[in-house]
Image 1 (cartoon, rainbow, N blue to C red):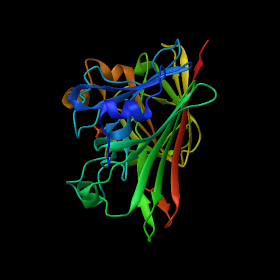
Image 2: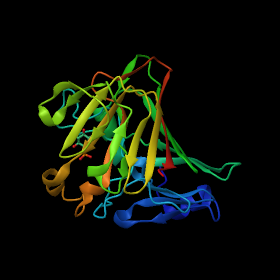
Image 3: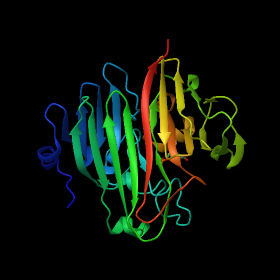
Length: 304
Ligand code: BG6
């Protein structure tokens, strides 16, 4: 049975002075973590991480000041989970972009204080007739998060059916930057990419990625760490990943941000999505009984 009530969640999964569940706007419940290494918050709906800040450091994950928390809606910012497809559905235009995982209820299935003082949380998607109508393949989806001096996330798809399944997925992370116009993304040099802002034209990256207008690109053959250099906040965010051979870099820039309505005033200047994905031709084929892990570790280094 699905449990979305803060009192019941606290009784079963709360950890005194470490992890508690709070009621949030829209009837949502949010897990608040505060440990020796970091603070973090995760909406149980969508298992959507909304914030992570290492102790005595600036937030690493960006959440829009105008983010809305509402049942069945995705939250603008944080780490939306795209699953079981990335972008528009291949054949059904009425199915939601980036899949349904980020807008449906999830269960909390485990919480633990680890030996090093970090916090582990595990959530599992709740399937329903509505999700099965869009994704009839028997499967399980879990997300394992470790909130510590780094943030580790493992999105695990299990194929519980008797046929192979093909999944597209993403950790659609919004990173906080001092000024996106001065940020640089390293790690994509030489990768072919699909430029969605240029009608899907195929191009090749040369050097680091800089942002001076709307950017919406799927980088293929991208398995190396991506690094966001931020001279304004004087730090470097490192994105290490496994189970992902593509990365998406996205910033909506001014006009698109205005149309979105929930990105906040000048929000586009302070966010940059560098998403670890299985997107476009990079999809995960999972044999019956098999698993696919999309794993990331985010860490921060000071820039002198
Ligand atoms: C990116 C896509 O991953 O997500 C963009 O490449 C899209 O095309 C963006 O606009 C945001 O999507 P959404 O559904 O969260 O507004």
